[in-house]
Length: 134
Image (cartoon, helix red, strand yellow):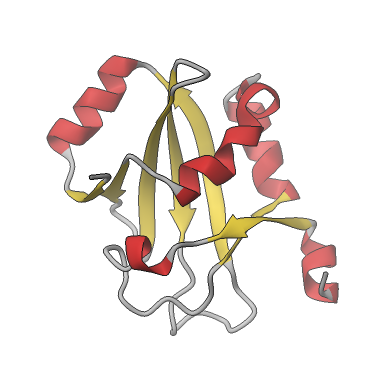
């Protein structure tokens, strides 16, 4: 682990499938996906219990998303996944490292939460879907 990552308290989650995520931005600088301690604290504060109960599903969501939806921020995606074994729907915001970013930046999880089926359907119906799992 790099010194910079230790300072930020970041942990590696997985590596992206670049082909899937090119729908968000064509020039991805790295495959590595991290989450920082600051973002974990945010998730715990804003979505009580979700991190502790469902954190183990985050790599699965990133590696095999059901949908990737356009976010309003550049180089950012809403990653959506229904996890069968949990019987739950999830939404994750993923900031992708683009060529214009600081070279030390990695792809990183901004937030993660369990959502209701109605919210899942609303997002798919009202937002721009960039990717749908075949």
